[in-house]
Image 1: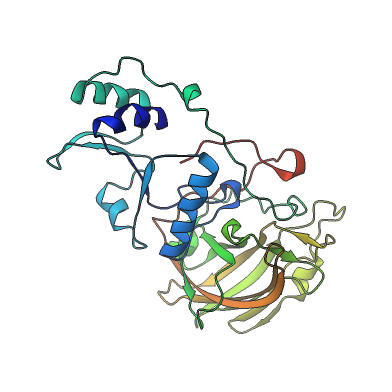
Image 2 (image 1 turned 90 degrees about the vertical axis):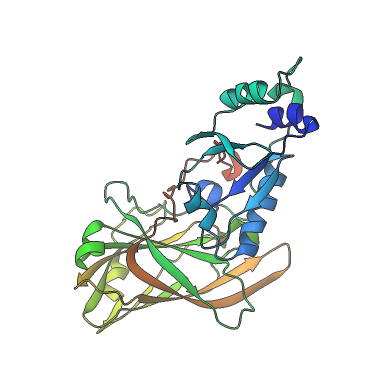
Length: 326
């Protein structure tokens, strides 16, 4: 796409990438943003890492543009000067796009190749080690994202940690089943967990008629006995449950903290309130601090949350191999 831009931008063709939402949150650790400012930070990250010269259009947080364009994950449109869509495809194809522009604008005598661009791909900034915790394997559970909403407090603290909530169809349609809550450090803030103090703690408040039981937490990779004895220590009082993430031996890390619950109750439109307490550090800015923030989890499908990646194996120093960029 960048090579086509180099050939046709001088001829008056305008190119834009559209940031709609993350189709696969979890790749390289990036998670769904909670504000337009965070989406703009994602665009800045993409420009820095991908060395792109094409401009960006950022969709609003209600994803109106995404819905208007058909909700496809990687669609492509060619619009003529009068504003009429003259080419459209559900999956972007640079080869076909170049043929379209050759027909609509005119062919290029010496087309630019990808090698001609001499672009440099920059890896994600690693602020702490990963891989000290096993991930909860959700692939066979057939979970899908449900609606979440951060509760704004005084607005002084960003959501350094983002919640990913997924539930199976039995929870969504009947009110009982499996619910996953994952707490992911957001790479745009360059923070890591402080493991020299208490681990992440959650308080889950369910509406009347709904109860949660903790089934599993993600465990240390060096744990020879994966039995999670701490599950028995989770305190449940009516619709209120307290649970802690596993204690990690390393002083710091950037792995998600994950919990799997059994939900029992009747289908309800009332949300589950999740309050998370954790200690985060930013070495670049020289601070560590305690954070407490809350989320509302509604047990209804979220069509804009994407299909989450559970992570891939990493290479030296925790770096992942390069992957396709959306």
